[in-house]
Amino acid sequence: MFIVPEKEIAGLVSADQCFEAVEAVFAAMARGDAYNFPVIREAIGHAEALYGFKSGFDRAGAVLGLKSGGYWPGNAAKGRTNHQSTVVLFDPDSGRPAALVGGNLLTALRTAAASAVSIRYLARSDARVLGMLGAGHQSAFQLRAAVAQRRFEKIVGWNYHPEMLPRLAETAAEFGLPFEAVSLEDLGAQADVIVTISSSFSAQLMDAHVRPGTHLACMGTDTKGKQEIDPAIFARARVFADEIAQSVEIGEAQHAVAAEFIAAEDIVEIGAVINGTAPGRQSDDEITVFDGTGVGLQDLAVAARAVAAARARGVAVEVDL
Ligand code: NAD
Image 1 (spheres, rainbow, N blue to C red):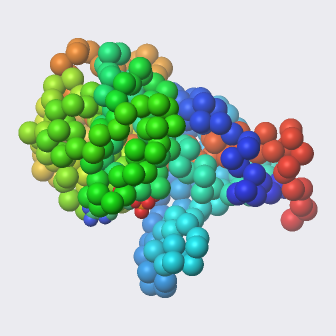
Image 2 (image 1 turned 180 degrees about the vertical axis):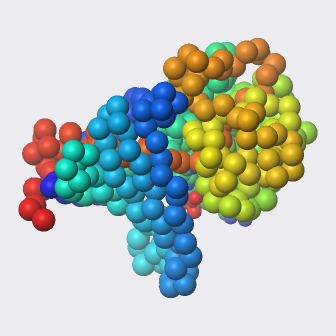
């Protein structure tokens, strides 16, 4: 098997390659060629950690494996990233381990790729203002991936902890784009596309804030109980998700379904839009919501790309288990 260390990942896969990998695996999921296994996520009663597995099999891409890891809140104080993950790939023909891959940067890249896919397929083509709700570690990756999808002219941002907003300003500056810190009212009033990427447990962006025509990529809610937007928004939106089962269980839609603003049957898998079997945005006035809960197959898809690149460049470490 091959080991691909975390420190090599940045030089192995680009954001564009992650976009292609995630788009392809969403399409395979909607065709029934790839499927995710149920997610396991547990508070382990040690170091206040949340630990779990996301796994699946992509028959079309012949990629089988899992991502394991979670959240260790005490890591940052020790100079480590709180989110930790590792991907293990297996040979689908023999079950033998094929690769062990550092999954921290890949997680950020594949999550940003998912919202970027949603923007490509669902945002208005004339979207010019990108709104960011959240300014943590993931937000910079989200912003970079989003700006590649439309001719954005300005970034506006709001964060629960305003002292973190310079991260968004600095990332916008990488693209020569102006950044404005705004209220939630102004975020909704100005933004054509809003990416939410916070660890909030209550609705921040309210129904009254969101204008017709807005595309929302809700990326922060990946656990039962988390919440970023008013569930009433779902009642007047067309709703898309990476995977419907995860969306209603651990995604932003959990609250809208519980409040009966929508039912699971109202949610469209984004892969169906990619495949052309379901319509995407149908009018300029429509509100579209993408519930990006983060599926294991995204991790496997980008890890497989990283392994191929690492082997081609001679930076994969071969070991015999
Ligand atoms: P981070 O810890 O670096 O940043 C946390 C963000 O949430 C900051 O913007 C912070 O201000 C905000 N926040 C903290 N407490 C809050 C509160 N009480 N109310 C509102 N906002 C609050 O985290 P990160 O790595 O940037 O991750 C952000 C979120 O994205 C997390 O919830 C994480 O689990 C989720 N995530 C989702 C996926 C996916 O595939 N959908 C992948 C990775 C991370």
